[in-house]
Length: 348
Image 1 (tube, helix red, strand yellow):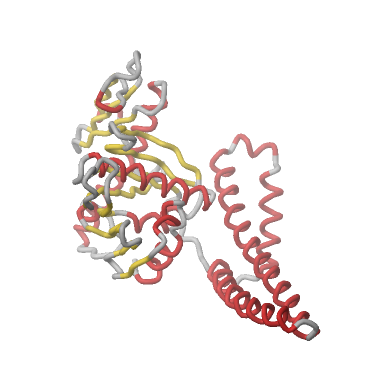
Image 2 (cartoon, rainbow, N blue to C red; image 1 turned 45 degrees about the vertical axis):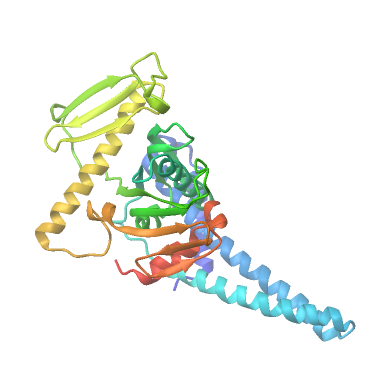
């Protein structure tokens, strides 16, 4: 296990490298160092948290030893028990952080596609809900997010939204979100108060390294058109939206979120590269007869993985047959209990 002193030493070295003015010309190195800085900061913060818990335990023990106020002593005894539980949990988390070895093959960024399935407007609204959950989770983790494409619906939802997450352990956590998510609740459009069941599908695509996927210009057909809003009406007078058709595979991708063609084209190319990498992985898995649990390919999009039951305040993950409560907390991006349970119970 690594020592916390070594972590702090490495952190200082990373800060020194980041302060080098010449680093500006090496963007890849800057991103790599910045990502490492974030990882080390989380370890150092966890160690500080443990020290603070130890200090609070010691303060409460001093109150107990003084025996001046029986009521205060009782409160101190209760708090010591709670703080010790938190300390044990935090120490376990720190040990896991120090033991964690980064796999160089693990993707550094992902593209998430969320699409409305069965359920009409309610499904589109839940696409927006899931997007907000993932956005808030990303913010809590310090990840960077960029919307690549979206198709808004009429009632504050999305028929589809595609976005990128990077600058952290995005793949190791978000890969568990791939599949069909089912929601059971009373829609805002329901006047009779009946519970409806709707579905959305989530795809998690690893963003390939530059050397992994090569696309020749003559393999692409690029079309430009006006971006559209809810109901399909044009919202831009200029043809800034981009559609790319990859001729060898027939894959079609679009992007219309930006105000200029160049940025939309770059976004569409990012989506296309991720889809081609996914297809390549599926083909390789089929050739080798691989049955690895890391969910890749079209099968993951058809599998019902989770149900969000709002009337019963219950989220059930069907892969590990486990339920969680406090849906409102999850809606605020607090997904760690679900992700950690999946990490512990699913072997990749």
